[in-house]
Length: 144
Image (tube, rainbow, N blue to C red; front, side):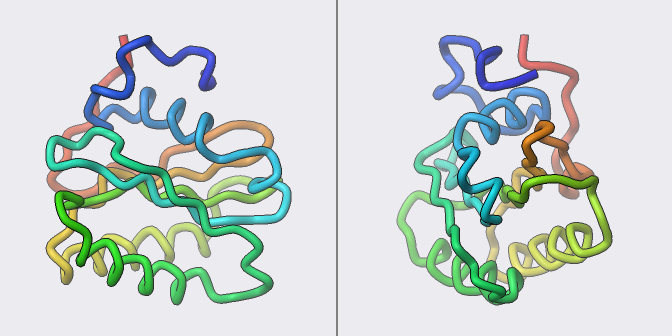
């Protein structure tokens, strides 16, 4: 799947469907972000649909956990933004332990802040892979 598969009404859809959300992450996270490494935050409206993507690129070796913590603080103060989708971008590779640690940290940080983590996705040049669905969300079967 890819962003080319997005249905025409995708901006109105809730980002609780891993297939749809993977395609949205594919659209938002550029090839340049994947090449250089980045962390993306797809800010969601109260209903769970996309409000605004924010991609933090050129990390220059900065700890992704610190970037995540700073963004959670910012998102907590934004009106009508009760959660986000996390996108981890890099050129290649499978989901690894560092991705799992960041995902768990995001789950914990969101729980402390009262935010919803709608999902975490790894975006590489080979495609987009979802990490396990956050607690409290039900995985769905497809964007159709």
